[in-house]
Every structure is written in C-alpha cells, then in structure tokens.
Image 1 (tube, rainbow, N blue to C red):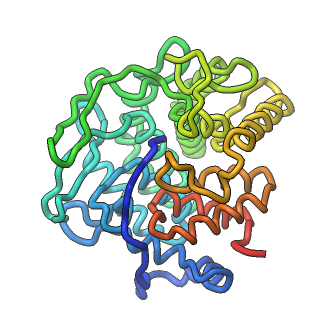
Image 2: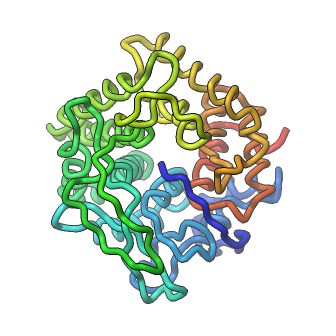
Length: 364
C-alpha cells in the first residue's frame, strides 16, 4: 500500500447515460442520503482518449495512471461497471512486460496521447490486487470465458511477482530483482531496487493468492492447491512479523514504527484482508481486536480528521470499522471524504463503495 500525497481538483460529472440500469440502486442511495454520487466520481476518473483509454487516473486532473490504486478502486464496482472493468483488465494485461510480467505506472504530461512510463511502487501488490480483481470479476459476472482466455497471463503474473520472489520467511519481496523500470527526470519518481518485504503488501499478497486459488479451484484447475500453499506461507510470514501485540512494518525492521503510515495503519491490514493470524479463529479475532485498538489509541481522530502526514482519509480504515460493526466510525469517515471531495481518488472511492456494500448507510 502506497502513501499518496496528491492535490487534485474536486470530482464531479454526471456519469454515462448509456450505462446499464444495474448502477441505479447505488446511485439512488448516495443521492438520497448525502448528494455524493459515488458512480459519477468513479466515471470522472476514466481515461477516454489515447493509448490508455479505458484505464483510470488516480484523481481528476492527476495525469497519473497507477494500476495498483485502480485495481483496488475498481474491485467494488464490478457489478455496476462490468464492461468497463473487463476493458480495464484487458488493458492491464496488454501492458504487462512479456519478459518478467511486471507493469509500470503511466504519467501524462498534460496530454493523454503522450504517455510516459514511470516506475511502479511495487511489483507484488500490483500483481496481487489485479489477481483479486480478476478473480472477483469471474465470481460476480460469471464470465468464465474471459478468465479462461487470460489464464496463462494470470498465472504468469502470479508466479513471476508472487511465487518466484517469495523468501524463506514466507514473505514476498516488494520488487523482482530484474525490475528495471524507465524513469523521467520531470514526471517520474526515482527508482531504488529493494528486496524488502512489507507487511501491508503481504496482506494484499495473501488475499490475491487466496482469491486466485479459489478461482482456479472453481475451474477445476490443479494449480489451485499450489497457490493456496504459497498463500499459507505468506500468512505464516505475516504472523512472524509480530511481537505478539503489534506488527512490524517490514521484514527489515524489528522495532515499532511510530508514524501513522506505515506504522499505525499496518496494524489493521491483516483484518482488512482476512489474514489468519493463528490456527484458531478466536485467537485471530483477538489479534484483529488488538490491531484496531492500536489504531484507536495512536490515531484517535482517524475517522474525523485527515492525518497531517496523509494525502487522503484512508477509507480502508472505515471499511475495517464496517467489517467490525463499528458503524459510527465508518459513517464518520465517509462524511470526512464527502467533505473533502477533492481527495476522492480512485482507491478511496473503492473503499467507500465497499463500506456501502457492507450495509453501512451514509447517514443515520
């Protein structure tokens, strides 16, 4: 998970009138309760011209395609925008390197027809969140044909970015050793190779591997058990990154990180992605409770104020609250995003939608 500092214009737009009426229930709820049209906010981020038409910018006017954030954001909109998600996934696969199955970010210097390739923030999380998206797409839409047709590419992405870079401790490195992305002095951040395994990334990796394994199992594919074993090793590695009360942010660190990001938010990532932290569910839930208590103790205003070090509310925290039945906190953070609509970037929109889908109303 990347901490993003981004200044973007307020999101708006009226959505596409040609879209399926399946989107209507979500839009109606949002308008009745708050006037915040979640689908219009998503549609405002869609790239409509140039070689990356069909992908999504991080934020309105950001001129930045970050596949990781788009994977996360689109996950909750498969039912509402199935054709758009399929088009996006096709674009993702076409832009994966045939040499090592990694993918680069894209910047647009004010011109969507002139893309600039930039380093990705990671290899592992881009792959795992894409596998989750593709697997969920098949589950929600029943489009087995798309999944089967792209299965060789999906398996290559999974193996090259997750299975192959897995360390003896079970965790997966943030980058492949052979990842050498292009850079640009004006538009791209500098790139530093790293073999560190981050706890947050690996919760995403666990979830992506499990989702992919379940999809393979549904198809009767024998590789399902292999990727399930890789996922189990990741879970064991995550368990090893804890001193019993908190999680360290990476396998290269053995002391608590005091910052909001990554130290504090890391504590709830295992519950966010439902990583088993013990052999029994009761102990795992206790560890989840400890993580949420740590968040509340070290960032007590997380649901009502944007942390000064953060660029957006971190709506995933509200989704964890929703999963825990803490409706009040989830609603507070939803209101926080609505009050800061200029920060309604694609991953934030996605988690906002997941909160709605969890049964939490925007108000009341």
